[in-house]
Length: 369
Image 1: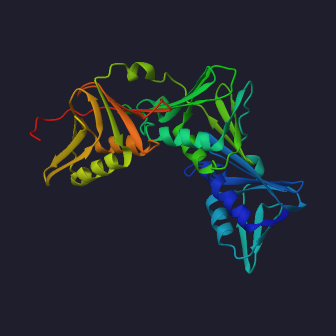
Image 2 (image 1 turned 90 degrees about the horizontal axis):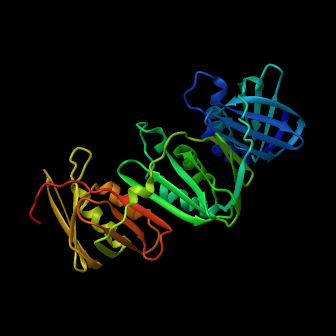
């Protein structure tokens, strides 16, 4: 292989592709990036056997070829190179010479034949979404994905398509997040995308109004985002019946300024540490929310105005779970629905139900406010 290309473009591509590289593997090829040069194009590929990425860059290709280079070392070299143009030259012994400006590196690569093949995604159903829309849907639900393997299927988000509506659902046993948007898709289906895949997609998705295409197979899903292709395994298992978890019944409805509520919760949470844990006690009463928190180092109280209709409710929450729901709400104001101190609180937009967050209450010891 003998090629030259933009150092800046290659550095950006390697930074993105590195996210699909295995960091701890007994197979050296999985810790590398496959470089394939041909017909004025350099293709970069990375695959950790669960998540794979590919992208292409314009390059001057004097001699086509393929080689695997260690992703971390190659990425560090490319980013530190001083010149605008970078040259890569490899030989039959899989030695790569990388030159730019005044710097030269000679590093040992791995034969391209050792790189695993990407899985083929056949018998797919496809649909399109705008990049900002999918970015928003992932961002508003990823926080509620489970971070332990007690039920592996909950370490991902459920994507459910029916009646030209896409619903993304995440749950971790303490909270639930749902985001709903219209989508043009004639098929009805459901599948679970790993949280790791969604987290990496977030970093690739742009804010510009540009569409991406999604291809869903039986065991894998493929995203085409600009000149990037992302392929991922799907999670198998029985996902929570989220409709049953949402339930019905509302005895109290509260409208509150999102930022004011966040600030208030953050203030009373100052007494909570990793060592000193305590629920935040919240009292919803007529046009006022009162908060308190007690730990062994002290006690804090706070209050703010709201619009309340229905019964008075006194309820406890894990401060982090409450803050996650509020911070991921879109809009200056949110609507809170409660049904007593033992039922989950629903967090919704002021109008409609484009998102719905469920926060489970925490049992509290009796305390005088």
